[in-house]
Length: 535
Image 1 (tube, rainbow, N blue to C red):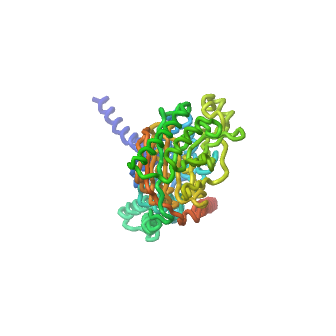
Image 2: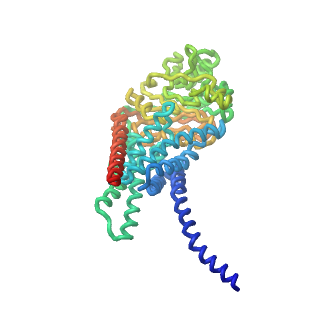
Image 3: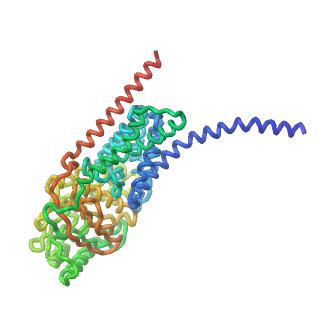
């Protein structure tokens, strides 16, 4: 009996001793778990899903995790948020080359999000912190879009908002203003909830603090509604009938490149099929035809058989074709769009300017070769960059060319519009990425660009999804994946410039300066606090 009594007494003493420790561990695990899960929530808000609104609770939770913490804690929590977001978002980068490059890309890109987390934690102690914090996020996106290797802007918050209520803000200040509004609203939501909980607990709240929280939610929404008149699909310079050709590829994956002639033949065949339908009166005759990137990986300037195939297709349809080719000039490779006239042959070219690292050229070639020679074999020769904007005059219409990866970069799209483009074409090749989400993510970028610059955007793709996008961002036609098809539609031509087009990089610079001001204020306040503590 004595032993039993002692055992019971010991267990009673152990219970209160262990329970606080368990609760402490639970409290420690909640912030890292919440950071990673909120990053995952941001990913779920991206296409092909239309759950754009999930970006708001994602940033609300992220703000709750970071608010009031040290910059060092913000660094780690921001990295977890970045991993939760980018790991699933960029999984397509490893579809054909394995997990190594995918994981390396995510590990590097998440560092930018980690730095943003540190910055948000620092400014979260300031009055009006949602504004400073949202500006810090945009500053992080600005850095990520420029370094390393000319940047990688994939995953900008704005690119997840093609179906959202904030989309008209793209016409006001481009992707930086659109992204800022979404992030501000999310952080503002965090502040509103926090203040509501405090009011319920204490019965008091500072009016100024409450006003900042409410305005952080309300202003982006009101701004988006006010920006709607900037979004229009009305023709300003008449209309044209455009055909986008999706020829398909023999099979998905990197080895589609070994079947270059088949890919060219597929696109020529689909164009000839369209020509037969036009002749039979089943389809309206297009004013011009757009082929995708890599539709002729055989250089038509050096190979008479490739030239003959394209020439035959152009003569069959009887209108100009923009052909995506791989061309060698003076020993250099170019990813080129070629304007092919049915009577004169090639009459103009555009060389891709923003080429893809590790896809079209290989940085650190010797270092990467030492790690894995197979990776260097995939990019045997680097592509060279073009230097001039590409605007083709096709049946009187000015068509701006933005080749695939370039659509992710603000400057490449804007330069074509500034150069007079009345319509934008985004010829792309996504056969390398199989049936992944990549094509839907890229399609969403094109929808945002349509609203940003108030232009029709056509997206001819080798294997799907090709689409016709109106200047208001709506998709009016699209193809399936890995099917041969063509889209023909009468679309509006526009020449007016949105505020975003006219302002260019200025809104982004302004937001970066706001972020710098907030970080400077936070640093100064912390320094004064430490000095006061020493005294």
